[in-house]
Image: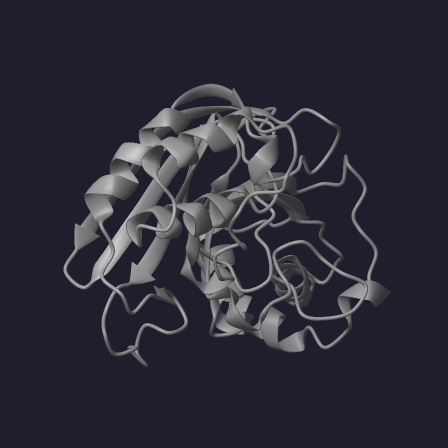
Length: 268
């Protein structure tokens, strides 16, 4: 029955209407989404181009036969991945949440999957209810590039000093104005509270992990780019710490490539 409903959904989501807030059977759901962002223009829906939000809304329209608006906890950029993106949406569904999860995964593109799905608690909002978000930036630190990791890691040929990178990024912990490393998605507030930051080596990879209450646009990639310079000896640890006092975005590094970045988890 559920699979049949999914197959029957041939209409474009843009041609369907959203259900009224008090429609019978209308529930708000919370979902944890994993995706390979390589072929997407980010999470947030765009006028043109493929997006993760657009793919989720297409699948939901196909399964539920009405338009559904998806709201994500983080707006990942073009080429950025997620292991634990969290979304919420309202839909009419009279079966178990697990059946909705199975139906969606049956029609979603192969590079997007619903890892968990449940009825959301009252008042839940994927973005505004979040307490913190965890990001990971992965660097393939090998003399020869790895074809198997090229979509999920940034390749750096010269050996990095991960200990220096780790020492440098400790200055990020606490509440800081992080304007040199990005810009606010909405408004002018660029102050963020970083709860944890660290760099470590795992075999052939160097990993930068950071947890904060919220993030600026491009923030993690810009931090990663500067930390790579520290690891290469092109930027001193003191100079990296000095970047926090800058009142402009004229940092000495270009943003690290998007494929190394992954939204790992959203905490509530």
